[in-house]
Image: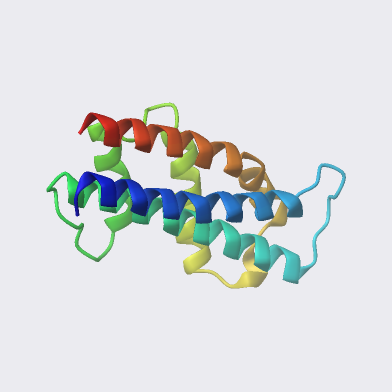
Length: 146
């Protein structure tokens, strides 16, 4: 993959992520305090998908930098995020947000949907669009420097 292909890949991924983040933000209005199980499950699935996309972008950048794909297994997602932070793809001030989405993704993949807390999901959801936009900016700045 060359730099133009990488840029195209990331653009496609971020277009999908921004669509998901926008849909997610429509679920969590400031005046709504209770959500039924279907709404909570949908919000959880959207958040899960958003982080999957973020991880896909970060891993592709690591592969482009010849660091190779991170092996499957326990801790894989944490390693990807840590390497992206070390390389400067993810700035330190964005890391706490991404770590929160990663923690949710890990919880979501190992829990029953009935264990989800809609208020905690909304807390993440309200910040999602801003996080995706900030990461997009950082990723394209990084691509321009490599």
